Length: 441
Image (cartoon, rainbow, N blue to C red; front, side, top):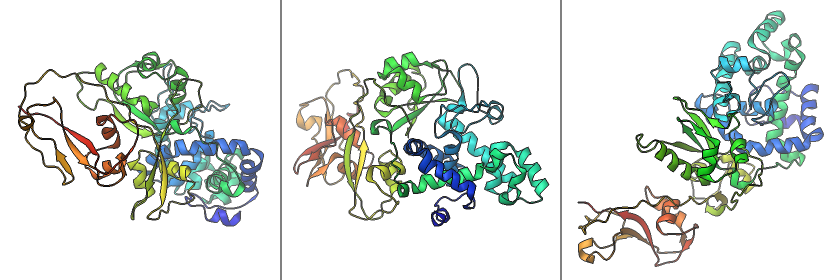
C-alpha cells in the first residue's frame, strides 16, 4: 500500500502513509465497501466535468478527488451544518463566490456552476498559502483558521503544523489521500464500481436564457418528471428561471433535439444556434419511467496515432467511459486494438415542408473521387424533386467509417438521409446518400 501511495498518478499533496491515512483507506476498502462502489460508479459521470474546469484554470487534475470526501459525488448531499452540493459550499461562502441561493435555485447543486466556483476558490487558496495541503485545509476550515495555525506553528508544512488545526481539518488531507488511493487502486482490493445505466451516462447539457417549467419540458421531451428533477437538482420549484447569463439544463441526449426545436420555436428571432449544447455525463438513479435504454454498440478499430482523448471527442463521450466500456487500466492504445463504443442514434430531425419549386438546373459541385453526383435536373428531366450526392461503397464498411472519410459529414446525418436506424454495414456497390443538392435560382 505504501508503494501504491507513492505512485498515485494525479498527486496533489505528499502521499504520506500514517495512522490517519490508513484509517481512511480502510474505511473505503473494508468498512464502507458498498459506498465506495457507488462513489466509483459516479466518477464516470462527474469526473469529466471536474477535469474540464480544472483544465480551463490550469490546475492539478488531482483536485477532482476532493468532492469524493466532500459529498461522495452526490449533488443532493447536505451536511448537518448546511453545506450543500458536490463541493459542499456553505450558504455564505457560496454567495461570496457568485452562486445563487434563493427560493427558485440553489446553484451549489449545479454540477457546472458549483465546480467552476470551487476550482476558482481553491486556486485562490493555493495562491495565498503556496501549497496544496494548506489550500485543502483552508477549503475545509477557512483561510483565517489556517493562517492562525501557521503563525502558531511557525511552519507552513501541513504535517508539522496540523496539531494547531481543528480535528476535522487535521483529518481532511489524510481523507483526501485515501480518496485518491481508492479512485486509482480500487481494483487491487476487488472493489467493483456500481456504474449507472449506459443509456444515461451520456447526456447533453444546454445553456438556456428564458424561463422554462419542468412541466413544459416533460411535455416536449417525453421524459418523466422524476428523471428531469434528478438530472437538474439546482431548481427547487420545478422552474428554470430566466437568466441573462444563462442557466444549465441537463437532458438525456435522445431528447435534446426535441427540446432544441422547442427552444428555437420559443425564440424565433434569435437565429440559428439558440441552444448551446455539449456532451455531459450525469448521474441519475434508474427510473421506472418509459425511457428507451437501447444503445447503439459499435466497434472501433484503433489506428496508429489515435488516443483515448481524441476518440472521446470523436464519439462524444469521456475518456473514463471508454476505459470503463473496454476494461482499460491505462490510456495506452495499440494500432489494431478493438474498442467498444456505446452511442445513441440521433433522433430524426423535424421534416420541413417546402413550397413546390419549378424545375431548375443544378450547378455541379466538386466532390471526392468516390462520390458521384446525380445528373442535373435538366439532364434527368426532373425525375424527382430531390437530388443527392452519393458515395459508392467499394468494400464492406459501416456508415460511421464512411462519415469519418467525408469532411462535414456525421453518422447521424447519413442515418437520417438514408432512412436507416442503425450504424449498418454497407455492401460493395451500395450507393449511400451523403448530401442533398440544393437547386439554385
